[in-house]
Length: 367
Image (cartoon, rainbow, N blue to C red):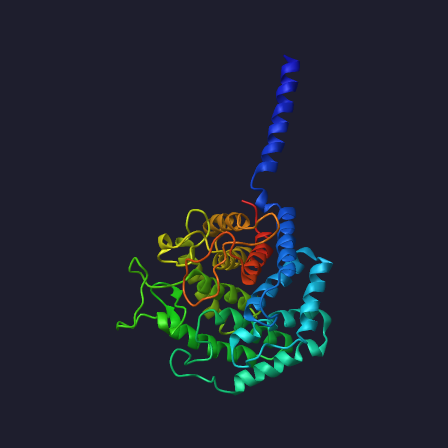
């Protein structure tokens, strides 16, 4: 009898140990760090686009988050190499949010090294952006941030500058331009942003709809908006008068987005017509995962409500990373939801979104 009891006890210990080890390895900290390093390394070995381009602005935001998470020397070296190669300059257009997205990472690195050449071109370019009018063609681009993705590209640069330089005038400028975009593109009933004025329903012959008759709201654009909101909220002082506006918008979008999440955890290219699009879209899903996980970690979102959605999203994202570290199922560059992507479709911004998501998922509370 005693022998059987001992044998049973040993078996229970073994089963218990195996169960603990086998429960969702995607959430083990060592695994998260390893997949972030693997994805970063693959993407660095397979560069795409000009290093100053908006695509790399999103990627290197993720690379910086990967460095913060892993403290990897070779990742930091890659960040420094990018900045030095670019001579710490924005891209060509001072007036376009796409061309300053890379400046988010310049500012982050400046905060560490405090070298003026790392931030001076950004200050000068944003000065021109604020002082000069947008060179509009008078159709869609009637405000400075006239497409919703711009809310990831531009606002964090202005807010980061305001914090870094202790100059709240940058906060005020961001408030003005952000709210112009909000007024133009945000649908308060759907709690989602149209991509640009072409996709705002105006009840005329120019209106566009999905195959199922729903309005067009794509996951990537709205994912980037939510990612941008997180990067604003991480910076703004707690007592800043306009902070409640950004928090309220963030919470409204979070509630809506979670309600649209498919069972496999990954949002489709079109949020309101998911059945028309193949597979989960990683760049939009990555930014949603990042934004929702950050909200849980910072107690803006209820853990019981949102944690299951984040966990599903993260598991789905990790399944889109192949053995080499390439992040697939990323929608190509374009203005609207598309169907021309697959497990082999990759883009640098998809990797950036995954890295940002991992940087917050690793901090999540246990169940």
